[in-house]
Image (cartoon, rainbow, N blue to C red; front, side, top):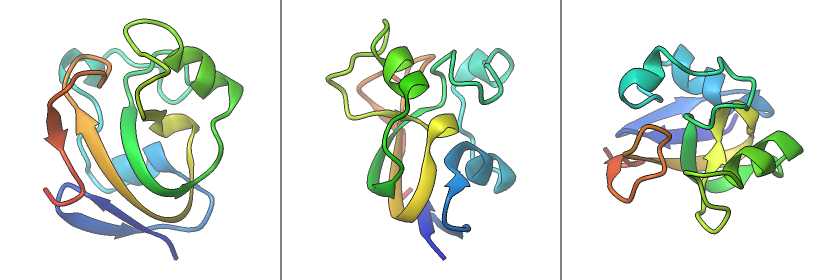
Length: 112
């Protein structure tokens, strides 16, 4: 079973599990500010679940690539949409500030 390291916790999930669902099921605060109320609920259209991922996950699909190519995101940043990402192996996550998680300052990392 893959391990997901986030906020000083180590979670386990099935291979192929949806990263957004794994985080929400384990009480991880994935959304910043009002994005907790106003998000697309996993459709890949809002971009508020963007996280930096180190580890083995699915390749970006067209929804992920398209949304991250639009402002305020930048395709140059190493972010992925958790809702469009499948966990394939052990991963470490970082969430940044900003409504869409596009900021420069980490809110949480794998370590805490």
